[in-house]
Length: 409
Image 1 (cartoon, rainbow, N blue to C red):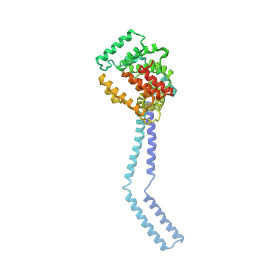
Image 2 (image 1 turned 90 degrees about the horizontal axis):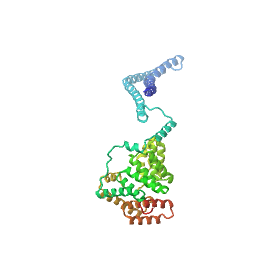
Image 3 (image 1 turned 45 degrees about the horizontal axis):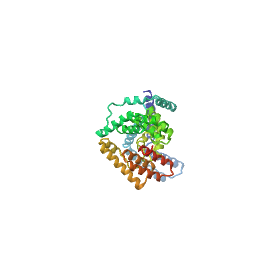
Image 4 (image 1 turned 90 degrees about the vertical axis):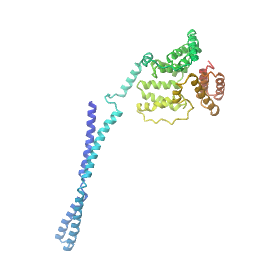
């Protein structure tokens, strides 16, 4: 409250000084006719003095007096006519003074209410950074975050056959705890039906079985499942999985996106903005993390105090829109599979006719593996290897797609 009083008084004082300046300037300006009238009167006095000194004759003096007197009468008449109009400019001046006062005082308080933080003490940069560090170190763990979510998370309606297959997979994996492929399939399918706790539990078994052979994408998948299970919150457990993924692959896109999200959640929008801005500019434009960044980065830039303009979106590969995703959630398993198949076929046709980056080829291979079209996946994989022969990074990306499709170990 003290701050508001001081700020209001300072704004009022500045506004008062401006108002007084306007009023004084108005008061110091008299009618032009009054000035002319004084000049003409002085001229009459000069005529009398010149006549007394013999500078001019009597006839010239009379002629000059007549002319000056005529001008005096005209100026006096003009001044009398202007008396009635002086009140309007005066009222306008007072109105302007009121507007200046209200705009300065009211505008100051409004801007602070909109841009400031009423009731929040001033914090030095070092203090805010320290607060963010403490918030990061003391934030809730995965179990606490999951427990805070509303109960009764709705599960998609599954067909009887699909439910039976999931149950069989769960039973088989429970009986064969070291079955790598079984745990990979279980993690993928549990995540597909929104059972993220069971999904990350199975993915942890995948990492256990793989040991040192686990890839960056394996750790990224674990982090993704943990985050989804916590409703979008990046817990310390998820952060640890993402950190391991970035150790194995510093350019891992999903891990870098989630790293930025974690920083945003713990009070470091400046660091989150830099990570997301670099990811957005690096692309590829159709990467799955690009659209979430585009939806959030302007707000992040505002929080970071950066004057930021969203880059023009590059052409992206055709994929599901937000409306498609919403519609898919209401579809039956068969309809959803048919929709996915249509998208996969569209991507396949585009790559066959126009080509595309290695990420798109890897995505197509992985999608064909999910759909069970192993022969098509092998054919696409073989073609992609020949197209990007000599590009180690592209080849590795394509091989990751093949691993997701279970074409190679």
